[in-house]
Image 1 (cartoon, helix red, strand yellow):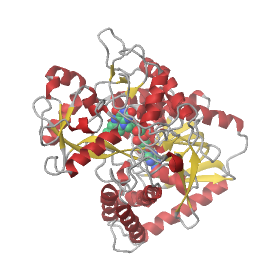
Image 2: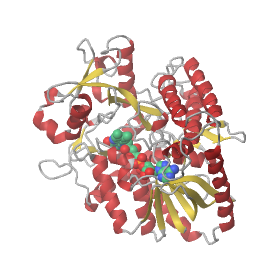
Image 3: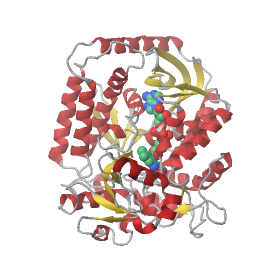
Image 4: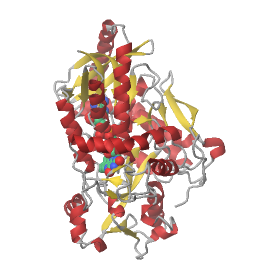
Length: 563
Ligand SMILES: Cc1cc2nc3c(=O)[nH]c(=O)nc-3n(C[C@H](O)[C@H](O)[C@H](O)COP(=O)(O)OP(=O)(O)OC[C@H]3O[C@@H](n4cnc5c(N)ncnc54)[C@H](O)[C@@H]3O)c2cc1C
């Protein structure tokens, strides 16, 4: 099976990349662990940012860029941010022309709601189901453009020769068979690694398996220690309660009935960036002002039933079904939860990685446009803008590459992977992979979470080393290869342990606090020593090896972040 371009992942970034590659004349296939419309993008609620100026006429893409850079705690690359925020406006109109039914202002123009960390009201939305509407639009366009889909295929290895892309190895999840695919260009659009953590808002498939494939193939990861904890996830299940709920006017209250955000961000209050609000909620709980020592209240009652039904119908449904609370008459119990992977596969402003023909886009990539903290509404934007850019560049690259793909190398890799999977399946240890996975998740959320302490992180590091050892002694309940979830989990687990390790060691190494990374022992930002990206490659012995790279601060000088 040979294609010019293979896109791994069928979320927003993957589908947009596929459409661009097809438009560029490349034969293109999309491989994905799930059917396209089940990718995590479908769950995005609150909206997508673009300075259309429909509500705030004086807004422009430069304001949007500045808010993004400030929100990132000055770790985002500023030219990359400008590229994204300038492209945002035509991107929204293109999506509208392709069929996205955005919510409207009374005069018919696209509506925009306030969002965290934004100086203007610029988040476009479709009720509280924005990801769903966007993903269906791009899926329809992919079908229209005759993209070839391999649904329920898991990519497990990348094949490279002389620093050039040759193709990949993937498992057909239904039969368990491995196959090789020849491709001169591969675009990773595999989403985030949220499920390395417990208490995550992410779909179960967001285990970072694509990030792991790139890492094991020698491609560096960037800024992995920056993990976003969303302030408002439903207590108990950690289902996301969109920032749009605060955008529409929701208040946060502690047990004493105080709107406590006045202590942490007196101007922006509930609409301060996520890292600040998440820390505020944790502080309230840790200092004894939370409910049941665990959560605070998000109160939407004053907004009124009519507006809540119009703007937040999905949130009303989630509250009723998963907490037995009606937002019209009850406050929601909420707590912070893991939400977004700011770091990812190191790539440049065109989505290129260090291997020729290998690209990354969307949440799995780190361009970097989010730096140390992503603003709400910027991720959906990143997926579509940089998905297109990666697809365009991959198509150009194909046109310039004349050599044939090395089929015998693909065959050798396939045989090696086949042996790896059979060895894994025939191992006779006593460990169960599900148990190891839960241990990893609970360790990460407890020890490398909102507030980070050196001794706790070191303990996590030790646990991960132990888990890696235990992983060599797993056995399986059932020998079948056919949709064997335990086997698939075992294959993902290899990656999850690596990613957990890179996050933890990166967080130990970075002795400052910036955006989503907060060190109790180093509470200040330290531009002199740490205004730089963390780069991590897998060393010969499998251990992470760290270095740094420069941050582009060519437009705005870093300043203290106040809200
Ligand atoms: C609940 C929730 C709400 C959100 N709300 C918003 C919002 O309102 N606004 C906003 O800007 N952002 C929001 N985000 C973030 C945003 O939705 C995501 O960052 C974005 O959709 C990611 O898109 P993606 O295309 O990069 O990846 P995803 O949509 O996660 O897709 C990843 C794809 O990769 C495939 N894949 C992964 N590994 C492999 C493999 N090894 N082999 C084959 N295929 C693989 C999967 O099958 C999937 O198709 C939200 C996130 C969550 C979790």
